Image 1 (cartoon, helix red, strand yellow):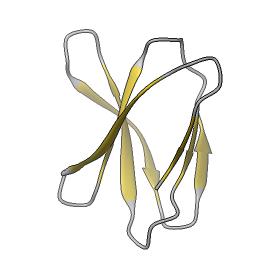
Image 2 (tube, rainbow, N blue to C red):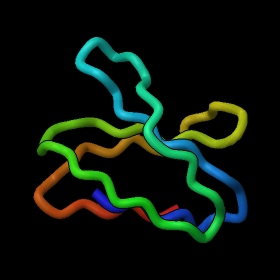
Image 3 (cartoon, rainbow, N blue to C red):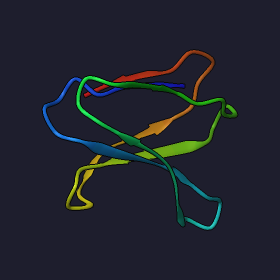
Image 4 (cartoon, one colour):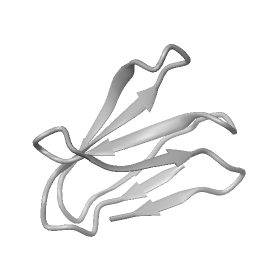
Length: 67
């Protein structure tokens, strides 16, 4: 899965565990890109600096998330 931060604010990327817990994987500054190997069906959460949800994404054979 590829995450691309096209916003003007930093974002944080979390994997959502099977128990629904946030597992932090990456801090994504504005203009940056992050590639994460994952499994189909895994859910990823993107939040802003206040912890507000920007998006939740389910991994698919080819997944790319733009902000």
